Length: 371
Image (cartoon, rainbow, N blue to C red):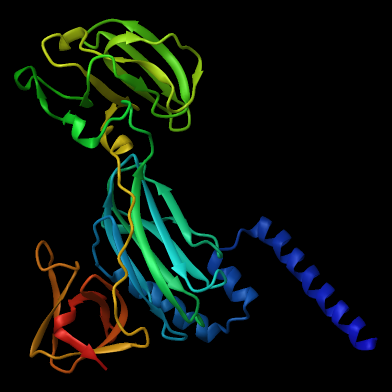
């Protein structure tokens, strides 16, 4: 009975500590890593070594194109850090999913934007978060860092992709229906195209690309019959022009509601029916990536011995590249015969490796052997 009471008191103590920590966290707003150090009793020395790897990752310059997948094996106290640079466009929602053996495996995610040759952290995932999404507001170069907890031992798969913030504004439309893009010359070069043209049969429904409020409907100017839809979430207006007719709608609308029908009114009278779709926010912005469709990505899992932790080069000189391809990639350095490389993961027939105390890189599987 005494033992039972003891366990009850211990459980009550830890429960009260947890509640106190949560209350304090609400005020102090600690980072996910600070919570990890405190709640898992990580020593200062070990935590410092772990954090230093994050600093190492900030210096990495690996580049990936979306969609991208990588798999591998986290080993305890191996202190791996995964860092990737990628170009993203306003209107895309960047999406990262991390799959591991257990839902209890901790993985930390930090997202940066490159501005004026410096990195600015713009988002970090919660301590128990393995799905990370971020809507891109400014086109540019971004960097994401992924770091497992110190004692994590698990197989992993990283799945990187993006999707548009809006739905496609023409019913049953496809990307190849877009045949005139942002910036194309108009009127003999006197002006540039401030939108995209989506071609479709006359009368095809034109859809609200997002939840919003109708601002204007009518016929005027170059756009002919048109609808303006206000997107309050992003503080911008969507412009639908050259409509054959306008649907009887007003006020608030949901994504997918019919606003009108494809036509060629206004200055499009001599062209085939199409929707001119534009977005305005302190001036016109490129609407392409807000609506460009992306296919469902089912990554192929690269095959290799999951017990591997290191590789050795088996050629006299082996190129280390910034992308998992020989074309359109830069050589970051070279490994010599019998050099040891820390194995971080694999994508296709390329290994993601880190030479000792150096920047991470990609190396083709034909140039290395298991150690």
